Amino acid sequence: MLKNADSLIISDKLAMIILRARVRSEMAGELAIIEEVIAQHQIIRLNLRGAQSFLADLDALFSVQKAQSRWAQSSVEKLQEQKRQLQEALATVQSGLTRHYDYEERVLPPLLGEALTKSLIFVHDSIRQQLEKTVTLVNSTGFTELEQKDLLTEKLRIQNETAVLSRMIEEHAATEEQILLMLKNTYQTQAQV
Image (cartoon, rainbow, N blue to C red):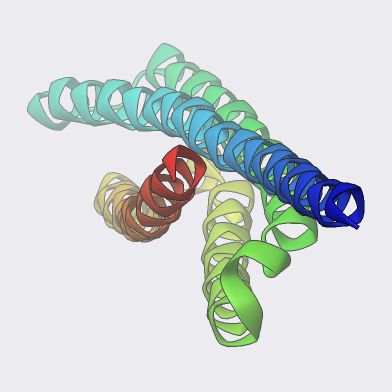
């Protein structure tokens, strides 16, 4: 009879060890997801900075051209090249965000729960809409057809829409990372227990 009691205690201890191992394994998977999302945010920030640098180049070009009384053909060609580079940078941001948001919307719901997931998708959709608005504006701007004052107006519109997009992405990433770091700390604390 004593042997049965000992075997029950051993099997209970073994069950607890197995359960803790499973929980740690699940937490390790969740921690890996959190780390992956944060790493993807860093890549998106780098791509966004690339788009912003083309805007700075565009701004410098406008400053020089503003000082000139006439537009030379080479100035318009430079604008067209800057526009092409900005389009490429925005396409890179768009592609990266699409992949990233698809990944987040697939792997984060079990970690975030229903309410936070709905909020996440709402913000993603808002950013997608702003990105599309910015891309459409850049694509539709034809520098060769515009007079200097209209070029300056379009430049300001492009800068404004890109600044709004950048702010939205940065604020979302910062907020999301705060939530993820809180989850990470919780999982790490639970793993130590």
